[in-house]
Amino acid sequence: MNSSIVSSRAASLTPYVAGEQPQNRKYIKLNTNESPYPPPPSVSAQLRDYDAEGLRLYPDPQFTAPRRILAERYSLDPEEVFFGNGSDEILSFAFFAFFDPDNGPVLFPEHTYSFYPVYCTFYGLSSRRLPLCKDFSIDLNDYINEKEHAGVVIANPNAPTGISIERRTIESFLRSYRSDRICIIDEAYVDFGAESCASLIRDFPNLLVVHTFSKSRCLAGLRVGFALGDRKLIKTLFAVKDSFNSYPLNRMTQDITCTVLQEEDYFLDIRGRIIETRENVTWRLRKSGWEVLPSKANFIFARFPGVEGAEIYRRLKEEGILVRHFSHRGIEDFIRITIGTDADMETFFTTLQSLGFIRR
Image 1 (cartoon, rainbow, N blue to C red):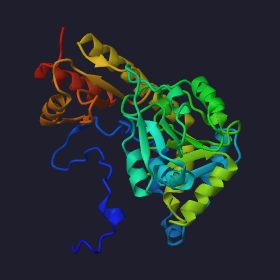
Image 2 (cartoon, rainbow, N blue to C red; image 1 turned 135 degrees about the vertical axis):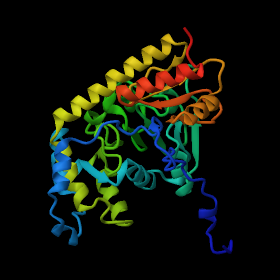
Image 3 (cartoon, one colour; image 1 turned 180 degrees about the vertical axis):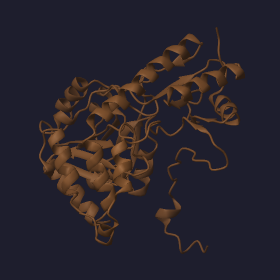
């Protein structure tokens, strides 16, 4: 293609690299933090009996029904709730809406969700990555001490480490943080044992809390995310959305979202199972000579001393098990392991033993 056709902005992009979704063979997928369990049975029944007649009509651009249900769940008003095509879309809208390039760089941790720097490049924003502590935790005091910047985005629990920050620590940070800058808390993994900051949004109008249905709600294939925040923030997100695509959530997706939100017992059961499996896997790995960071997510971040993370990733893939490896300096010896079913994790341990990645 003639290089003059491609804009300089597009040519400068370094896209986000998603976890592998190979089609050449069947793998045990422990690499993309999807739920190992299906959505509630009511979703299958809903799909089986779905009235396709309504698909000739555009979906509700205001997400009225799911916003009402979710607002009630969080004791909020619908005007404090926003939905999007996955939390990635919402984060993209938020980076455009709330980070002004004239105010300085966007701040986020050195090791965190790797889409954040991609959004910065996409929207012409500069960024500054602040180092993690020696134990891979985040010290929010580092962000208070930064002078000129456009705002802060923190994943809690953080990815890929899985380490969480207590709500009271975030609340203390927000009380000291400047009120004219946005603080985005990305809670993609919060349901697996961490504390949500949703209850803080009325105390801090500069706080935006972002969630996804891809993890604890078992809907990664449907692409649903939501944000909670001050009415002015939500109104701005709608303005950005409607300047890009008025209908990011189709009718079927909105209907299924409402169904899933009413299946609280199923949600709690699945979440509990994943947490229990995570704790068991963590204990077994540590007993087997692995270093495992303390996780409050549906994955763990671990390394086997003396063996490169890339080598473990490669050997496991050869045996039909996918995990995630990041080559970034400082975490290159770690692998990120999504928590699967108990059967998945038993196969994982059997494979580790056969490969010699177990110490007694």
